[in-house]
Length: 417
Image (cartoon, rainbow, N blue to C red; front, side):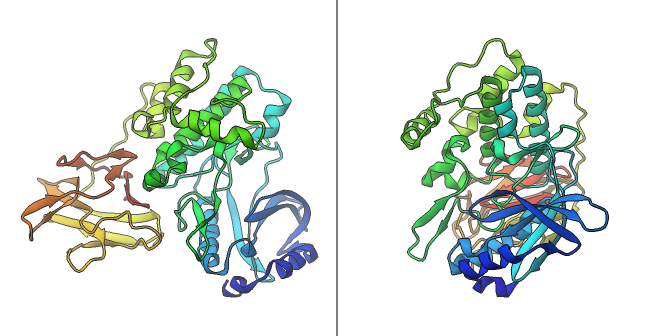
């Protein structure tokens, strides 16, 4: 898709306006448009099957940022390959007239924003919240973070099931919350302020924005809104409301939760909206265990031979096959460190040279934060922490690993197979 890198806004718009068909699909009306993409309804020319077609507006960012934008778009398509009843499914991807696009399932039930405007009963709200939670759980189990959960990104299929969509800023290649211009000044903050976790808006805490806790905060905001008909941190009617709203969210000043709501959901919403991410639910499994007590524990210990695969990061899809007799070290490339697992992260520098260590202890595999430094004869801990399933490993404590665990270091996540 190299030629798309040189497409101007004028040329791109003209090409989009002239399109009537992509592949076997006839284009219909526009369903929605954002800064980076525009979505059309379309129908198969012979079967009449309804789909949605999303085009990438490559001209929406400066030239130097386009390659990352295109890669992120490709990864959005790949995220839609996850099998789930609560995630929008991707069907095919291609380009036409130098404009990348992909085809995805069409949801005729509209989005949650419109559904709220027409009115939702408390029982319906709980059902919708449960579906959103399961969609997030499916994402997180595959090492993905949505990063922009809001009512507009929740669609309903013909069966009335809520499905998450718009995974374009789900971590992936452009892990920054901003697209920066050539002077390194932010040009746009992704996501919607009303639903964003405090750490997403804090430059000093942005290293934690690939963790499930940011989606969990957004989930709490959405749940509060659908059950109360308003946002949890005060009014949101005009631009002047943004600063006080964000300050209230950062200090944990949640409006009163309706006492008539199911007590379990009162607890869930309250804990999701805690300002300190370490005091929130750390992963969606914790929430599901409250709603579905007695869920089977499917943890299966891994053998000394196992595979790590990058599911979020700059080398998406890369696999590391480990045959662990003793230890294996993980970190970024550095002449002063000897890492068997070398991770690339050029957009940020959140991965330490000596970030983590895998250990084989009597046939069981453990992960420890940091590494032994032979030069100083001391254990060096990572700068930004090592996480398993969203939970930070304590310093000096080995964490036993199981199949399907998701390890997060910096802005890269890896899954154990």
